[in-house]
Image (tube, rainbow, N blue to C red; front, top):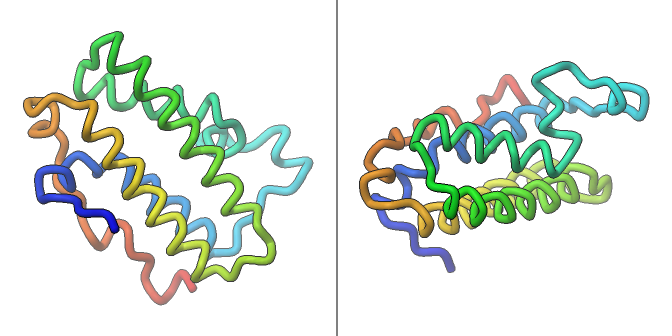
Length: 142
């Protein structure tokens, strides 16, 4: 069982926002077809390629926290692994939406804990506290 302290939770904001975005996509029933996967809208490119997903997440954290080269090299494989697992969950047609949402939330919490272990205490303070409403889709999205 994961045990994430309040300090660790504060560094999860960027990851939890991604969880919210992915959960909303899942709950809204958005599926990227083969033709669209080749030319997705600009904001969706991170959802089609694990390398872009990882690079985008590292770049976003770097802009906010000014990561060291060592931190970047440690974070990229964490985000790439998250992307591969996320894509597997999203593409699992046998998994009910509720189970997908739970699996995605669990994955993001696990990733957040890994990311948090790489950040300095000063960097953790710079990450805003996540808004629980941002990661919980409303009934209108079901």
